[in-house]
Image (cartoon, rainbow, N blue to C red; front, side):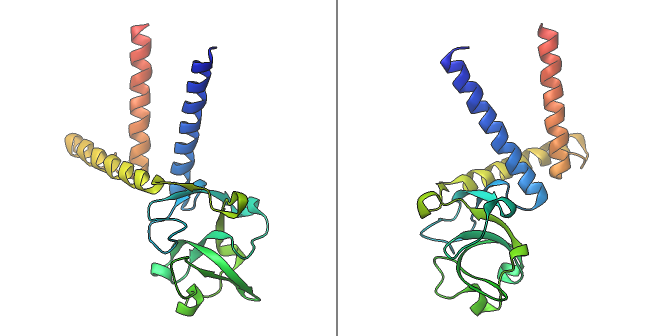
Length: 187
């Protein structure tokens, strides 16, 4: 195997691994390997649409002041996943704040973040978050394109079966099956 062929194989394997972890994270509702921010609350550390390596909380070890965590918020933007920095700790949990925010989340009705609410910790080699510029922008753009394609196919065939995550799996299976049959037919 040539160096070029090996490099291509590694690239494709990494691409597939990344895609699978992003899809799995989307299905499970928590980041697996990679995540991204949607708002400007973590600027200048993370701009809207920037991605980062997300280590599952179970593997990350103890959480310290200064760590950037992904947690299941109770009140921030109606609940859901939030990425903010730990700025303190009380006996009730972690005190968090977005880097761009002048006040802590707990100043604005969010209770202290319990360890059970933390789903991931941003990887910070050398003390700085490892940033993947525009990862979220690319993911959201891809989701928009896939959604449009799914709606067009659903309209074409007159069925809603191909909509949503399950429908996307059906479409990927159909394309893979077609690719396999075409390859066997050519051989």
